[in-house]
Length: 364
Image 1: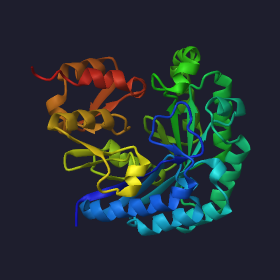
Image 2 (image 1 turned 30 degrees about the vertical axis):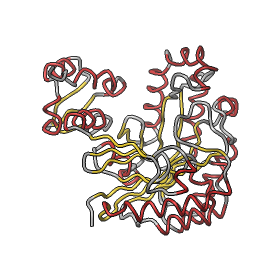
Image 3 (image 1 turned 90 degrees about the vertical axis):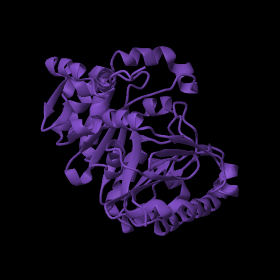
Image 4 (image 1 turned 135 degrees about the vertical axis):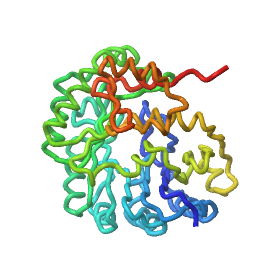
């Protein structure tokens, strides 16, 4: 038995590729869904020896719910059973009674991609859903007694006003999910979305700090704990335990086309080609990267500071710039307590800048 306790499975299928998305996705190919599930299970059989007692399983994408109730249920039943949490990402328009029942019966935590409740902004994001479908999906999942429901919210959408975000947050309060993931829109340079909306994205960049302030304050008022940069939970048991494993630098096994995993200092990225993966998932192209001790510590600092409880200094001491830490503490952007570095609210909002300050230059 191995030592890895976290499993990620990538399901690449989507109805439409949104212009801002840079994940490994494929559209159509409904006739290959069953073959893909078979391929994932073959990869698990060939590479799963590193797994120990599995604590979390996460099915992301893409759109895992596009597999449908029966096929998704078969995959979940064949994967190792997680002792703490199994999460499946769903799009609202794909949630019907059968799918909700399949997830509820298996005790699956659901991450629902709402993004916004304003139809014009959904159209801008090229999302093939409606606010009504989001509400219907929430009702179906609640009726199916899923143990934890998370809603995704995106802000900084081209054309979005502060009043639009306020209405989204009011709707979130009404729907009362157990968890909220609230992200600023990121459109990588060169993507279709960035080319088409470049000027309006620049306008939004100037508003992002105000948007983030509104998100944090509104969700706090609604009873959510801001436990990670983009994550809010009503109670500790609803925190995303699988994602916390990433932020805490734990090893995890990644299965599926385009999946990433890190095991014993080696990062593996499966190739993006569906045909090659279906032919043989164990010989399909994959890139590997050795993670040096310095890289591991830098990543531990960067990811650990995303969390409200921060990172232990003794885990990242060799890469820590102590003078920079003193400056951040003096500016009230960070604090040191019980041997841990924690970022203050303003520091968390300036996370990338703080991390860049705290990592000292590598010796020549």
